[in-house]
Every structure is written in structure tokens, then in C-alpha cells.
Length: 544
Image (tube, rainbow, N blue to C red; front, side):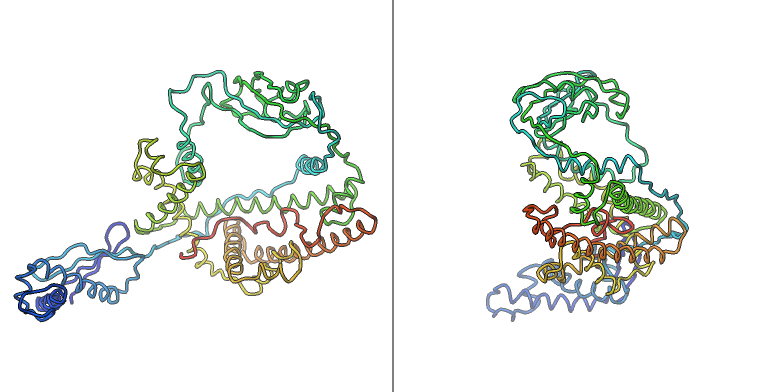
């Protein structure tokens, strides 16, 4: 066998295999015997007819086709071994020529190849997040709103300070009218599904901002609650004022102009009409921010009993942890994007098509949730499956490049997760839920351990990305991550023990509704146990 291997387009290898004529003849005779066992030839038992008679009976082409199939499989496997090629997927038989010698041509998709180039030189500015007093005020306000006491559920006329449940329907009443197009739920489904893909696509230019037309929806919500505070309008200044004095069950209609504060430039000064249905009105009491409130909230959080100043500091610490993780998450994603831009990444079309297949399946699932199917969507949009696949091609290629770069970065940075780190993270996860054997059994499973190991690999990689972008040693970030994880586990344990103590104290004092409920089911404030470490990039698929 004479084998020639060359690289061809679409990241494939081509095998050109030349064999001796007698090798083909042997294969044809074996094929003829195989065929003779499958067909009945008059005067001969199955498998006993001579070669020439079989050829005459089924034709030279049928014998050759059978010979090429059997011989081709063997030659392809032999070529893979000799060429030392590891294919990404199955090869394809491309051509066969008889003259001047029997020659087979195969193509095979190759495993992806990634050259990260000088990725360690990538640098980006990192801005340390700062927690503002207004953010602390907002967090504490949400705590106060979570402690609202309903004084009267049967109020008939809305007044300032009441909480109302409303349905809102609004639209722009100025601007150019939209083109004559029927509402298309399938198009809405595509838009919703494509938003996430479009955000991740590496667009060269920012798209022009959308300018709402007359009749376009501004806000539509069938069921939302707001507190009637004229100083805190939920949508547009003046919204709450139009609801004060409205009766339960009534529809309130009014128009407002969008002011130039806290609004997109494309809608400043636009007129919006509202139809608001008053579904329910309640008189409520919002607790004052005082030491008694701080004590009650801190007990619910599993903290030591705090005064207002202590509560603010506790909230500040939680927000700072969450802000740092969010900042590192965004930063590591930006560093990765910069690395991908400078990398040389090759992959076969087969791999890209698999990525598109996954996006198509996700889109079909999205349609099903909206009681549509893909065929109906294609009919409504006068498009084909090929059209839809082409729409996904760019974002699929971008996602594929990122995943391949992530995989190569894990290899290049020699990232491994120790059993000790795995146990620490497992304890960290379990700590927020209790210590009972049943809880441990639920979480301590092979599947959970596999998921945690993948998560830790990505956490370590994100720490490396942060260190690369800042030009620092990643070991310091890894150590910090491990220290914070251990501290979070200890904090969760302490909070759980305090919650149990508070529960016992409330029970002893005759309070049947302890602030925090069952201590074994207590959760931990966001920003600790379940916060992503040094970023939140998704891991590559397991098979990668």
C-alpha cells in the first residue's frame, strides 16, 4: 500500500492510497463469494457459484462496489494507523480510480488545534469594585420591605403609602407607526433565544440602537406589586401620582412623557399611554430602621445580634464579597476574549455543525415552551432550516472558539484539582444546608463530585485568567480562593449554630415563629457559599 497524506480545507486530512491490482482482484473475488451466499444462482448452492457466473448474474459494478466497501474499510483503518492521525469524527470515502493503479481517496476531520500564541502577555486594567453607601441603603431597604406587615387587606381607595397589586399595559403614542405586520409569536421566540447568542458574538461594530415606533410596547405586566410612594415611581415620574385616589377594580388611563433622567436616549421625551388595572389595595406598615429591626434581621441572617451600625457593616461585607466576585467574573471573561482574539484555532466543519445542532435544539425547546414547533416557525417566517442554521453560524463559531481556548488554557496552565480541594468545596456546599447524614448523602455522590470538580477546574482557570490579565502570579489568587472558601464554610457553620440557638431561645420564650425557621435548612446570604470563585465562565463540554 502506498499512502500519501495531506492537509486540505476545513481542517481535514486526505488519504490517497494506491494498491496493487492483484489486491483489488482478490477483494473482488471475496466480494463475489459474499454475494453468491446472498443470491440464488441456478444450478449452484449458495456460496458455491464460480466468480465469472456471479459477475454475469449481478454485474461487474455490483461486485466492484462490494469489494470497494470491504477493502476501503480495511485500507482506511490501516491509513489511520500509518499516518498517526487521530480523527475528530468518521472519515468519508471521496473517490476511487482504476487507472493507472487502483487508488482510494478518503478525507477525515481532524481534532481541533489551538495555538494560544503569546497569551501570557495579555494585559487589561482591573478596577477594584467599591461598595457605595447607596447600595447598602438599597440592600437594607429590601430587608425592611421583606418585613412588611399587612394592616388591612380590604382597602377600597388607594392612598400614598398603600401597596397595590396592578396590571400594566402601556405603549408609545408618538413616533412613526410600525409597518403593517401581524404579531408573530414565533419571531418573538427567535428574538428571545437569539439575544443571549448575540451578546456573546464578537461583533465588529455596535448595532444601531432600536428606536421604538408608535404602538410599540413600553411596559406590559399582568401582576406586579408597588408601594405608592410619589418619590419612587417604578416606571416614569408621575406614574404613582396617577394611581392615588383610584378604586379597587378600576382601570386608570393616563399619558406621561419620559424625562431625560435615567432613560435611554432613544426614548427621552417620548409620550407613553398607560392603562393600569387596580387589582388589590393593602394598608401596610414598613418597619423603621432602628436597633430592634437590626437585631431581628441579624438573627434571621444567623449573625451575632447587631445594632444598625453592625448591620450596615455586615451588609457591606456581603456586598463587597459579591462585588469582587462579579468584577473578577467579568474581568476573566474579558481576558479570555482577548486571548481568543489573538489565538489560532482550527477545527473541522463537523465540530461547528455539532455546535449549531445544539443551538437548534435549544431553540426548538424555546419554541415548545411558547406552544410552537420549528416547522410552524419556519412557515410563519418564510424561512428554512438552512436559513436558521446560517443565523446561528457566527455565534456558534464564537462559542466554539472560546470553549476550545478554555480547554487549551487548562492544559497550558497545568490546572488540576486536588482531592483536598474537592473535599473542601463539597463541605462548603453542604455547610449551607445542615449536617444531617441525609444532607451529606444527597450531595456526596459521584455525579455531584464530578460537577464540583469541573466547577473547581473552571474556578482555578478563572483565577489564572485574572492573574494573566493583571500580570500577577496565579498562586496567590488560588490561595486566596481556598482561604475564602474555608472561611465561608466556617461562617456557614457558625451561622447555622447561631440559628439553632436562636430557634431554641424563641421556642423557650413562647415564640412559635422563630425568625429563621429550621436551622438545618438555613441558607447563607448571597456572596458566600454559592458565589462563583474568581469568575463564572462555563466549563467546556465534558467530551472536550
